[in-house]
Image 1 (tube, one colour):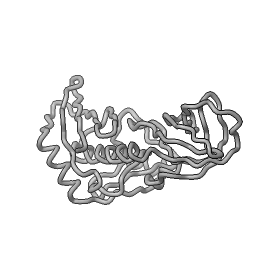
Image 2 (cartoon, rainbow, N blue to C red; image 1 turned 60 degrees about the horizontal axis):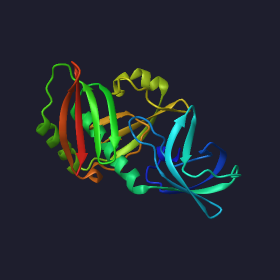
Image 3 (cartoon, rainbow, N blue to C red; image 1 turned 180 degrees about the vertical axis):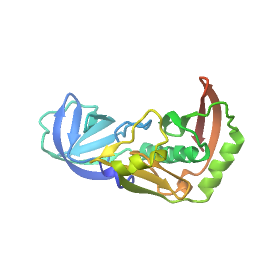
Image 4 (cartoon, one colour; image 1 turned 45 degrees about the vertical axis):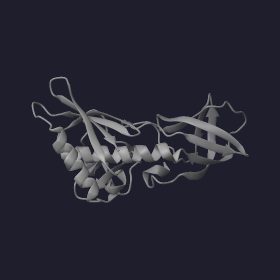
Length: 228
């Protein structure tokens, strides 16, 4: 999973391990598989000068499945060149990082979330606490302007068990890679386990609008944001 170390890879070389029922498995990939509220990547691969469109990327067990639009034959063990739809990926990266910023300014457990290019949302278990739309928006945009660096760290499962406060999501377990957990750290303002794709700095997000805050049940507040 090349994206775990470098979200900015747009083109890569790999080898086909298997292909069946429009599901392609590669020995390595920069395509992000749907998960954690983030959509799977789309794009294309080139095989022997033939272009195959990837219309979704999902995960099944420990495999990343690239869903092809075309049904192709006899491609096992062949080398490919993969190309991400960079415009869509980069929008997902900015939104995913923006949602981590949202976690940093709303200090409650996260009960759900979704990313959809320029729009995203998180649900928070806030109890009776009120969330002020304008106040949250101002805090988010101040953090963006401050240009905080976003970087990755790796810890063991034992280290995570000793620091349970790192986990913000209440219903989703952090993704494991070889019994290790990747942390996404935004300056000194937020750090949490995450397997998604992110930008290198908060300044890349540009500007956020908090479009709506909704009540979802007795305790949950849904905060919807857009990137302008």
